[in-house]
Length: 442
Image (cartoon, rainbow, N blue to C red; front, side):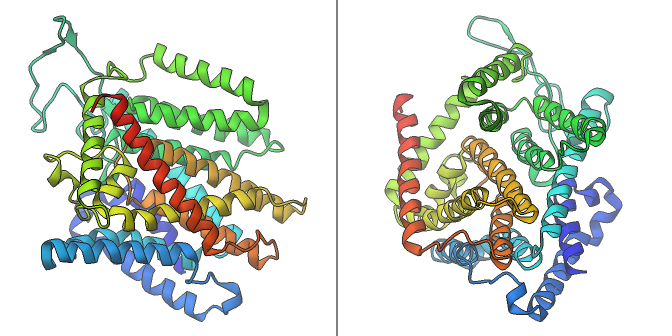
């Protein structure tokens, strides 16, 4: 019962069925569903024999708790109880969902169900946007129209330096925390990989009658978001996928053709790859570096980047995290990525041809590719604390625990190993941002 509540909660967190039906909004069903799911999860986890459940002292659990504690306590110090309560309210959604997943994803079957629901949610969200774009279905909800302002009024025409009319195509979006086209593109690309998990060479009818059209729908949805970050993430995903099957040279050629084809059909919808928006991102990254320099240990505080940068966000998940949480909070956040990636890589490389092990390797490979797709897009988006990231972390943790309980060991992961890797990637990511800022003359 607890698992189905959690799975249902995750699904409606993306599809937002309760927001599509306005009459249900006052009932706050998502809130009550999350509370009930958390209670049922605690009961189910505590009543399950220890050998059959995920241990809550796993590194990702401890690092997530440490991250939340650092962020909330620093908010308390900076802004008092007001900022503290706000930080807790923002983090508890992700933390609660993460813990519910960890307590319930205790079998391969449960992992398959969650991956399937995330893939279906991508199909639904892409379908809503496509219907709005081509059929006018709930246009104002699912379309970001550059020709109108926030009040729905038509904006006067804009011209560039040469007197040419600047025209941008409408962009599809979703609702809730995915109401920005770039965020939707990132999620669609991430969940597209999960849909690929269900591709089976032995079931050609299902592949070409169901999965192929669904994949095409999601890819077209990414196209209609006109997201440059979405284009980059799909390109990287394709490069890695094709490299395993076709080799590095052919993969590079096909990926280059994909990018050139996307640009030829104007995937950005009239938005240049380098324009005022792109320059504003670099300025935000420069601001983040300055915030880290001024507050190296604990940053400017959770959710305070926009206040420090004239109301604008960082447009980079790494910059947002290290500028708001400092080196301490950024270490805990980066450790979540590093530990999960090490686990998935080791699982993917486990030797053996046992059918159960083969499926574990396949899931690990799919989730690892989803992780990379998300993190590539995250370099252009402020999505440091979103549900999708912690969903991937939770799946990594649970798959590792399932493999361990089935006797497939990935070796001991000492704190020394992941701490060293975390520090390396922490430094490297900050250096890459600093280098990008310097190259652009800021």
